[in-house]
Image (cartoon, rainbow, N blue to C red; front, side, top):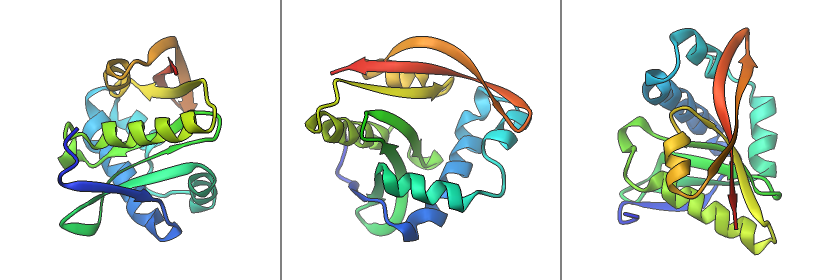
Length: 161
């Protein structure tokens, strides 16, 4: 894991706009190889429900990865609930395969394991499935999720501690 150029910190409410922008940009530029434009529009629409996102991000253990040389620049973010459910993991399109996702997931898993979680679970996109598989997550089932009239495939994946 190359952590020389980034550090992790706790999510703050004032990060919401940057996190939502990063989410949408990542989905549209990275997940586009596995999902149609209509599916991407349903998954990451132009407008966000801040009233839904913010409480969830604050309730979960949410971390952001920031650039060492530009601490205000968020390179990625991830969040996990107290029961070990990894809800979101998104890394900026220009910083894929640099260790940011690995660093975020490792930190969240350590946090949850220290609180007694015996396993971690996520619903991984087609794009993210290989990333999680490489980190010991096993597909429990493939599922179809409906978003704004579009059906998206993802995978329930689990990792035992």
